[in-house]
Amino acid sequence: MNKIYVNELKNYIDKEIIFSGFVDVVRDKKWVQFIILRDSTGKVQATVEKSVEENKNMVDLISTITRDSVIKVIGKVVKNEAVKLGGIEIIPSNIEILSLAEELPFDYNNLDGVNIDTRLDYRWLDMRNEKNTLIRQVESALTQGMREFLYKENFTEIHTPKLIGTASESGSSVFEVKYFDRLAYLAQSPQFYKQMALAGGLDKVFEVGPVFRAENSNTNRHATEFTGFDLEFAHIDSYEDVMNLEEDLLIAGLTKVKELYGDKIKELFDMDVVIPTKPFPRMDLQDLYKELHDLYNYVIPEHDIGDTNAETEKLIYKYAMEKYNSEFMFVTGYAATKRPFYHMRKEGILQGYDLIWRGTEITSGAQREHRYDELVKNAEEKGLTNDVKFYLQFFKYGCPAHGGFGIGLDRLTMLLLGLSSLKETQFLFRGPNRLEP
Ligand code: ATP
Image 1 (cartoon, rainbow, N blue to C red):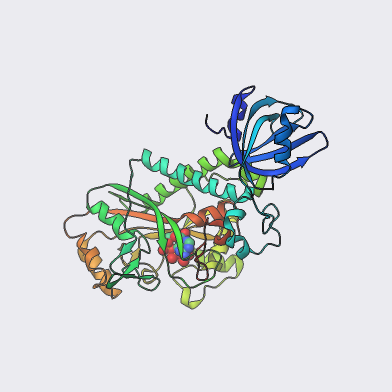
Image 2: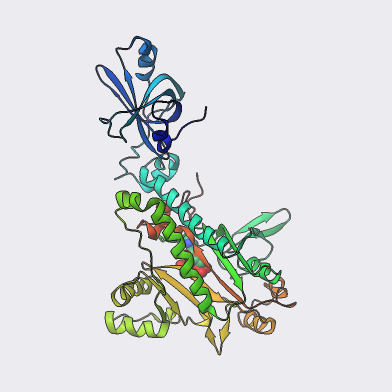
């Protein structure tokens, strides 16, 4: 017999089952003992009558069970309208303690006042908080929805190496790793390899995998390791095609989340999963600067001209909501100097965009430069020719026009649930001061 999960119990009324899970609480009353048990799908009550002679050993055992111990229950599922948890309870015939829990260092059901670092030190306990379980489930549903969409669109999921031989993309924020008698680097994105796959004849590829950035900053939206949801596809006419695909992808992901967890998110986070409508508003950066100045008296600092920063992104959100009632906004017209050399330029204008959601950048996307000579020129301009020699080769022997983007999955989840930081959002946060657990 297999373990039955809480959400399956309704199919086993009047049947004998095995249940195992964590003990939420034991209520030892005069005539009866109630054990509230839980697994990742919910909670159920097990009820043991003290007056029943055969229950004697079980009753003694139950009195020794501590909170959060894991027990195995063999028993009958019965209907009982008086039971709050789904009108169902388990009447055990046998109980076994599989793992007896010591006293917990903090109450994960009441995290107010518990320092986030203490929570992270004991992340596996912190995870037992319903909200934290839901964060993981939501991120999984988001990924599922987006993956399913891409499979339907004939994308191929690829896996690219994270250990690389040259610190290629920007060099500034790369981790070095001792690699036998030389140095290797941790990949800052799968960018080059996604493009190599297209040069290799795959038309549409994506990858969901770790991305490493040696950013020694403690913001709420930067981690040193995060999960990138990256894709690239060929035979496009412009970066408009890339933005169009991203709209559909996000709609698919959010729709899956709403379908599976919309109600639970409302209950625990008091957030509505809003499915955006197409097209998301699109605006040129210069026009935006003007609007932000006229409406909010905002002037972009000198060193950020041609780019956005955290403050601009907040205002862009405000503007997008006020003007378009949209949580999303595509921003185009970034300065080539502020973007990587592989973003295509046409008559000097960068063929790329950022997508801002709820005031934070979630994506950079672009049509990529596939013309070898142009690409070499761009790399030279940035002084990268030597570093990216191997990459430039991909475009020498025929390569279709293409584009793509990378979404920070962790940021997406954070924004979706209105969480305050990646520390809270990531399963296991990695930042300048955190490498454990
Ligand atoms: P930012 O300007 O916010 O630092 P970026 O321009 O370096 O981001 P990209 O290199 O375009 O970001 O990466 C693609 C996406 O990955 C970003 O839009 C963002 O969602 C996410 N991302 C980037 N850096 C981080 C990070 N350090 N931690 C978590 N997510 C990140």
